[in-house]
Length: 111
Image 1 (cartoon, rainbow, N blue to C red):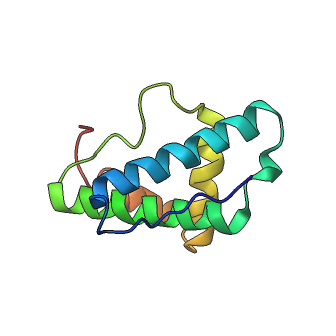
Image 2: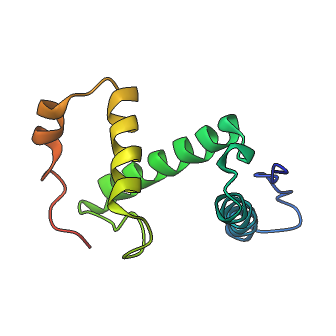
Image 3: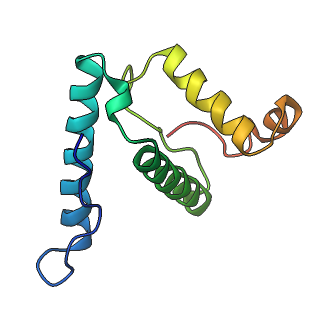
């Protein structure tokens, strides 16, 4: 899998347009790898970089808005996919279920 450039020249495109192009490229590459049964083609460092940026952006937007933001479109991921990712993030952040219980309803109803 080729690594898409996540930074574009600010002189030629706006940040939103550059991000949109990079995200589209990354998503197409991921969809192709998953469809062909080769998730190993997705480089771990790139996946971590994208996931880290997405989690930080999501948390900042939720904090700024004071309410939940749908993390993905309805039915875009399976329950298993959501739980695999959530459990990995909980473990990576050195959290436990009691920590999760305290934060679970913090942001209010879903947007």
